[in-house]
Length: 260
Image (tube, rainbow, N blue to C red; front, side):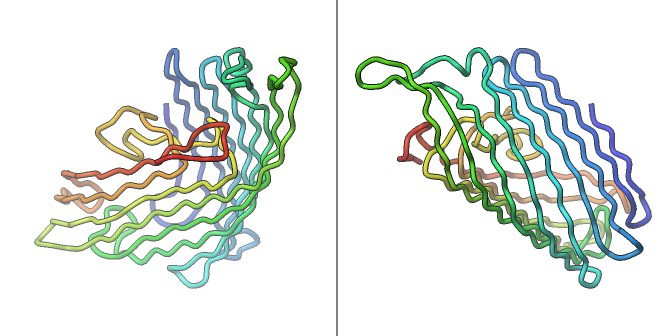
């Protein structure tokens, strides 16, 4: 289920609620509240919450706050702060390769973002450019059970520094009457000394890599290039054909080395 409330004729408050239930796989709850004009200024504040339960493996809660200021009509500079908590479930607490499968962790991320939008139409544009880039840095504290060399079980605690990048770009090029070519790409990168399964980006489905099941791939690096040929039916609707090309790099979980 997906409920979206937003003004259709310009900037205004936005409310977004999504409930995604996949029996035997995952339950995801997303909530977002945004106000683009605080105290009558072009100062945007967005609060987000995401609750995710991956069968009996782990549960994750994410709390986010983002503030952005518009410089002109096309450019926005923003700052963000988020807190992410992972708790292992029954399957996640089991030992694998002499260590707990899913550690208990708390991560605090902070960062900044740049948004640029110069299009002729807010909905279904014919020409223009959209760019959204976010860079974050955080500190992750985790604890897990591990079997020592002498066969005893001990609890180990670690602190990891992590860096995260997200980027999206779309270019709209008019061809003939009511026909538009869209070129673009998406990319996400996570850098860390070690990785847990809950850290990785999930790739697949209509929102990332079309033609594959939701969350088909996991990786600390994901990228997609896309091409769309659109036939505009009116100012707000269009039919289109598309092609996606994806790339995923997956690290070795729980170890310092990684593979692609």
